[in-house]
Image 1 (tube, rainbow, N blue to C red):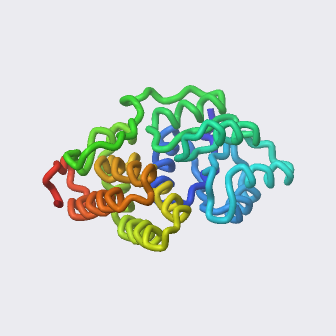
Image 2: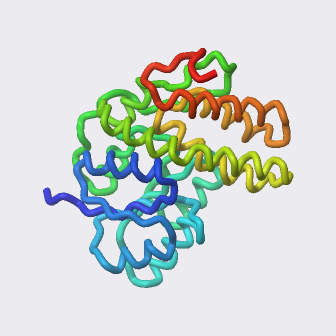
Amino acid sequence: MNTPRILLVEDDPTTRAFMTAALESFPARVDQATTVATARTTAAAHPHALWLFDAHLPDGDGAGLLALLRRDGYTVPAIAHTAAREPALHRALIQAGFQAVLTKPLGSAELHAAVAAVLGAPAPSPCRPRVAETAARDLGQPVWDDEAALSALHGQQAHVDALRGLFLDELAGSRDAVRGAFDRGDAGGIEAALHRLRASCGFVGACRLGSATIDLQRRSADPDALARFLDATQATLSSAGRPGSGPGDGD
């Protein structure tokens, strides 16, 4: 079988890097786009076997992008991916024409299985089960879950290290966006920033911060939830992605 060419549309750098690495190990050739506009240009420039579209994009959404490309005459099969878990949204994406909807964070085995199902190709042998998103607990959690991060990337430590570097480079900006939106009472701004961060935490195994992010999504007006989020962010930044960072590290 020829190596399929896939168009990946994702605006978050950490998520995009993870999904690209996972798709290349399928194996597949991956073209990247970060907006509706660049996706349309890339779709026109190359023949693709599959499209993978983020449901939420800076200049629109995955369903709208798919509708535009279908109107342009393209019939490429498409999969949507989103950090949202609402069944109504997933149903709407299927009704919009996506063959499947993937929920982030996810492991490479789950991504491979979905791609293989649409392309009618065999999926690579899985390494370990998909990354389970951690439910909100207390601050006794470790800063990093190295096993989950390695599982998501088929045990490739170099990929984990690279993803964590990207994640940490973006983290201070994400924290400031959340804090600024909270101070303004902007619930929509808080959710937009946390939506991206939640998926990224799962991909890199940022255990404590992922838990605090979920908690703040549920209690977006609660100062205690914000304080927990900021504490977890600082612990994550201070740990600098060291493997096996435990409860006391970075505090």
